[in-house]
Image (cartoon, rainbow, N blue to C red):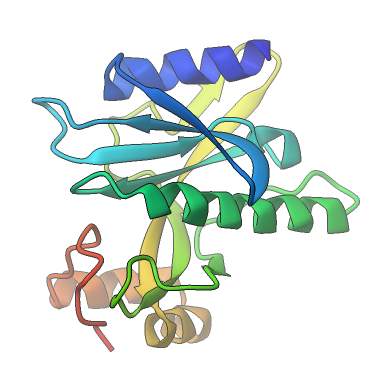
Length: 180
């Protein structure tokens, strides 16, 4: 529990001190939800206990509070934990990994996958936390469509990011049209 508290403090320094903690039936993991601040115009959702399965915590963002995000983030956490259990060595979530959400991110959205990326929206130094014993990496999850997931698996994360940049994709717009 000490590391969880330290991770929460690390996140609070970056996202603001107001936070709500949630537990989902989808996975045995705490999820912290930080509301927007003057400096950050979006909601931030962060896992806080996933590090036990592979030294990684996940971040997601939205323009408004979406309760479904907690469930979806917990579903990804459950998949990460299963991967960790399947491997003998400690599993570490890597950029470019794709996860199916079992449902779209929001009703009427075509985005039903997420892809892991570096925590690009965060200030330098945020993406790794250490207390001298544990080293935890923060990974950002972007909602993507099935066609974008297939593209990323065939061409790689860099190619998908280039496609998104050229198409001016807003990755926090969950109702967006897929770039492919």
